[in-house]
Every structure is written in structure tokens, then in C-alpha cells.
Amino acid sequence: MSDELSSSHVDLFHDGLRGPELRSLYREMWRLGWPAFVSQLLQSVVMIISRTIVGQLGEQAYNSVNIGVQVFILIMTVIAAVGVGATALVAQAWGAGDKARAGRVMQQSVIFGTGLSVVIGLAAVPLTTWLYRVLGADAATAAQGEVFLHWMLLAMPLMAPGFFLAAALRGAGDTRTPMLVGLVMGGLSVFFSWAFILGRAGFPAMGVKGAALAIDASFLAFTLIIAVVYLLNRTILPARREGWKPDWKTGAALFRIGAPSAGEWLSFQLGFLVYIFVIYRYGHAPVAGYFTGITILALAQTPGFGIQGAVTTMVGQALGAKKFDYAESVFRRCTSAGMWVCAAMGVLMIGASYSPLLPLSFSELSAKALQHTRVYILLTAFAMPFMGIAFTQAGGLRGAGDTVWPFIATTLGVYGGRVAAAFLLVTLFPPPAGSVAPAIDIFWVWSTMFLDFFIRIAVMGLRVRSGRWKTVKV
Image 1 (cartoon, rainbow, N blue to C red):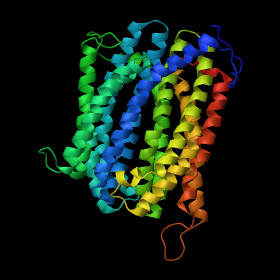
Image 2 (cartoon, rainbow, N blue to C red):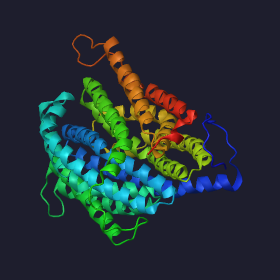
Image 3 (spheres, rainbow, N blue to C red):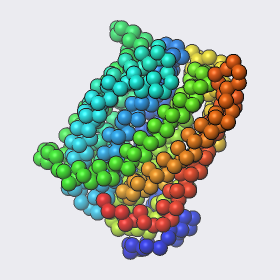
């Protein structure tokens, strides 16, 4: 493979990688990807169990927690930008053989990321009720959601250090440590949800507040455990006692790379909150069906996210080592793998939509809400191959530090595709007399996801093909 930087266009479909080199690429993808896959799978299973427990409180409480989770994720996206910068910078430093710089980047990501979480968490607390009302939630749902979000936001500084340490470890190629600690966190999350929400194991029943405290306690455990493992020098990044003070140059690099990713995820989450506003026009049942559907989707997406994380590290390390042709091959081969793996998960989703486990797992939901869940799952199953392509393209560009283009692609896809088309449909087919729900079926509103992914794939595909991502300065 050539180590010379070429400015020519990248062939998206062909390369000279064969035999041992190709097998080595797939082995590395698997080595990095399977722990990330297991971590995502665990998070999704925990989410399903937790939402099943919350569902026992009724549809209103169920919706209040789910909206709260979406808002919390929206806020976390700004903070997570530092993690993207950390993964990219650590990966490139590691690929270049500069382990000392990789360690310094990790330290700075913890310092700046935790500081940012304190500021944003405190600033967001007074806005919780307003956010629920803007999204169209009724007074009772907003009141329950406010309690949930307050406890989530106040715990953000306790979650942040572990998050950024894990991001740096993944950039260095250690995806197993975050996975193993995540297994402990997942088990604790399920136990705390069962105990705090329903009042088990000697704890009082705290309902929606208990759901937030369960998440807070499990994330705090994650932070404490991964910090202890690092300080005992049991990770790939050597423990450092010195250097725990702000380095503004490294901090600026973290934010320069991470800011577009923050914009991307912020744009994505805001778009989906607007999307929920449209769905709310159809009533509580479609909203509950949608949230249940994306819970199942989160489970099905886990292999795609595993490959995405692997691609981020592999592209970053390849560019750090100046193996430019190899970085191109990572894009080609892993994008294909992501597409086929997600397509296979789509087939499993179709089976899940007709499985008796669906009504058993969400027994507190109405029959109408479960029917909406099935429709959403079936539509999403056919979109899975396109998700796999988009996830892998975005992961590779982030590893290169080229985070602006995933931001552009996501914004155009979500707003120019999904949200704009959904609003157009409900505008062209207004509610009939005596009804508040638009005349067009919710099926067509959910189908706008296809336009979203087609736009993202086209925009990021053009960027990958240009080859300019290989020259981005980090």
C-alpha cells in the first residue's frame, strides 16, 4: 500500500486490497467493533428494560420520561463533542506512535469536557418545563418530565469524566475496557430502575424521579470504576499524575474538531424533537408507538454503531501513520460491511415486529400504540441498509477530523428531508372537521426517513470521493 498522499478522487468501490491485507483489515474492524457493539447492545437492552419498567406507570409517565431522555441527549450532544475531538486526536497521535500526546489529549478532554458539563447542566435546569411545553406536551406530562430532567441535569458533572476517558481509550484502540465497565453499569442500571421506580429491595417507589436517579447512579458507577482502572495503570493509556491543568492549545483543538459534531448531533436531536411535535398531532398512542419503535431500533443499530466506532479509530490511526491508501480501503470495505450487517438486522426487526415478545415486553401500552410500533419497525427495517452506509461514512470522516461534512449532511437530511417532508404532508392534508389529527396516515410521515438517509449518503459520499478528508489539519 502506498504511503504517499494523493489528491486524486477516491474510488468508492474498488481497491487493490486482497488476501492477507484484506483479512487483516476485517480482523481489525472486528477487534475494535465487537466490544463497541456489545456496549451499544447492552445500552439498548437496558433501555428496553428501563422503558418497560417505566411503562408500568402509564402512557403519560412513559411519554414524559422518553421526551426527557431525548432532551437530555440533545444537551449531552454539546458535551459529547469534546469526546469526538478526543477520539480523533488520540487515534491520530496513537497511529503516529506519539503515546505521550495521546495521554495528554485524554487528560485535557476530561478537564474541558467536565467543565463544560457543569456550565451547560446548570444553565439548562430552568428551561425544562418550557422545553416540554414547546414540544406540545400537556401540563401533566410536562410536570412529570420536569422532575425527571432536573435530576438528570444535576448529575451531568458526575457522568462526564468517565465518558471522556472512555472516548480517549477507544481512540487508542482499547474498546474492551469501556465495554467491561459498561457491563457493570448496565446491570446496576436495571437493578436501580427496578428498585427506585417501583419501590423494591427496601427502596421507596419514586416513579419518574426514580427513573432519573437510576440512570444517575449507574453512570456515576461507570465513572468511578473506569477512573480507578485508569489510575491503577490497567489501561492502554499510561496513567499520568502530572499534566492535570488546562492546556488551552489542546483544548482549542478538541473544540475545533468536536464543535461541528456538536452541531451535527444538536441539529439531529432538535430535528427529532420537531419531528415528535408533528407526531404529537396524532395523539398519545402514535407517540408511544414511536418511542417504543426507536427503542427496538436502538437495539438493531448496535452492530452498525460498532462498525462506526471501529472505522473512526482505524481511519484516524491510518492517517496518523500516513497510510493514506489504507485509510481509503477502510472506508470502502467497512461501508460495505456496515450496509450488509444493518440489512441483516433489518430482517430480524421484521421478525420482531410480529413476535409475541413485543406485546409481552410492553404490556402496559395500548393495542393502538403497539400497532403503531409495528408499523414504525417495519418501515425502519427497510431503511436499515441506508443507515449502515451513513453511519460508516460519518464515522470515517470523524476519525479524519473532518467533522464539518457529517454536520452538513445530517442537517440537510434531517431538515431538508425528514422534517420538511413531514410538515409538508400534514400541511397538505389538514385535520378533517371534528378531528385534531391530520388526514394523512402516520405511515407517510414516518416514511420521510428514507429521504433523510438518501441526502446524507449523497453528501458524505461526495466528500469521501473527493479525498480532501485526508488533508484536514487536526
